[in-house]
Structures are given as C-alpha cells and as structure tokens.
Length: 172
Image (cartoon, rainbow, N blue to C red; front, side):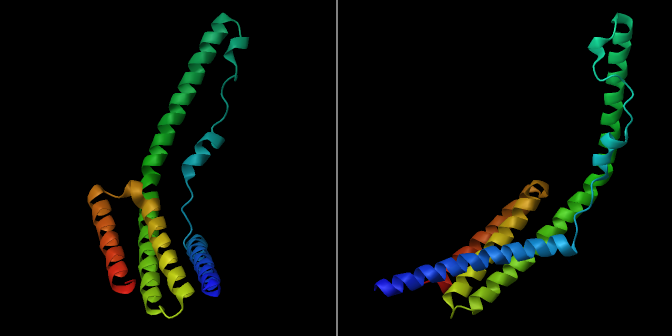
C-alpha cells in the first residue's frame, strides 16, 4: 500500500511537470513564431524634445509663468499625439490578442483531446489534460478584456460543459 502511494505521488508530480513544460513550450512557441507587434506609441515621449526647464520654480516670476504655460502646452501636445497613436495601434494589438487567443484555444483543446486518448499512462494523461486546460485559460486571460460579454459567456459555458463531460465520461 505504501509503494502505491509513492507511485501516485511520482505520477502526479510528473503530470504537473508535463503540464508546466507544455504551457511554457506553447508560450515560447507563440513568442518565437508570432511576435507581438511593437507599440510605436512608446517612442512618442522619447522623440519629443525637452522644450522647457524641468523646474520652473527656480525662475523669476514673469519667466516662471511662461515656463509653466510652455510645460502645460508641451504635455497637452504629448497627450494628443499619444492618443492619436494609440487609436491607430489599438486595432493592431486587439487583432494580435484575438489571434493568440484562437491559437491557444485550438492548442489547448487539441492537447486535451490527445490526453483523453492516452489514458493508459496516468502521468501523460493528467499532464496533457492539465496543460491543455491551463493553455486555454492562458488564452482566455490574455484576451478577456477584449472579449465582448457574449463571447465570454459562450466560452465559459463550453469549457464548463467540456469539463463536466470529461469528468463524467472519463474519470468515473
């Protein structure tokens, strides 16, 4: 009886290791072969010239007032430019996040299906099931803010049904 518990613990630890490596493999694969678009808006602050004294308080009164006005105008211009840039970049970023979500969802579901067929080796079965589930969750988390509420509801409903079905059919 004691030997069986050691084997169970070894199998569970191996399953967790498989899940962790699987998720890491998928994440690194996405970063390697489908790079995230670079946000050009980060460069706006770097390319803007410093057109004013950083501390207007060191200046005398007439110059101080002018300095504060110039700073305010500079920051307002940066904000406008930054918003214009973000408005152009946001659809590109949203498209990327959606595509990564779809990739992670497909890989996760495929991994779970493969895991169901490899039930003979407990550690591989459990590792692929856990890894597939975590991969799906990773996709959902990355895209959650961009999903509309109906898609969130549908995705979570499908996952719930899938998990209940797997539990009922395969784990009884």
